[in-house]
Length: 253
Image (cartoon, rainbow, N blue to C red; front, side, top):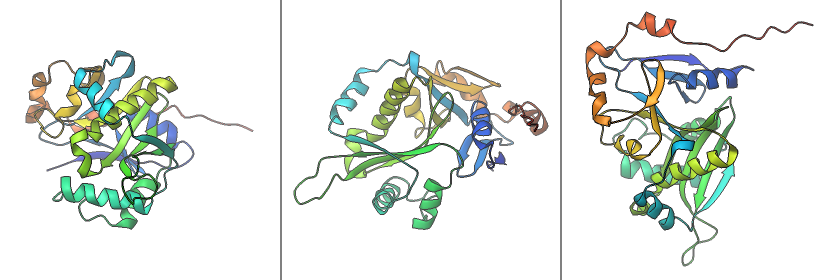
């Protein structure tokens, strides 16, 4: 049974609220900020990469080389038919039984466009082959811009290019973007101990997780199995009481 803490993300101070709560393990979904707060485990741990401490591995270097022909295109958060077609192929191949499997174009557009903060859509395109026109999409990432980093809200790619590891390429390119912009972190969402689908995140050096109210190096992933135990959960009232909110600014005429 899943349980979440959440709050609306709206108004003129939405960006400040998002920046503040994201540093405490919260994630954004459209105009809502949430953080898992299940009654029987605390396994969903927010993860981010410290850009200054990231060192690329040999396998990651090979992934960059395989994707060297891709072109990055940064746009405003506006959904397109090409993006949705790629999104559907991705879901049908990778997450056919997932919670997003039935999303239509209108729901997809809402996911991309309903953002009250600074967000971008980052597209990666390849050279055309045969009778193709333009540069076809290979992968796409909806990315939020924080005061201290980039947050990968949701990414998807063409399953036909899965062998080139486009998901890893997106993360590596976001690390490069953050480094160019002088931003210290790339937020990856949640990492779950023992989850095979989440295991790839632990393969990035400089990874840290939000645990016990602070960010700390992940260390050995096997050391976090205790988060799966019901006794790892603090009472909900204590969790709420520890949340720090941005300071209110009083304006006077």
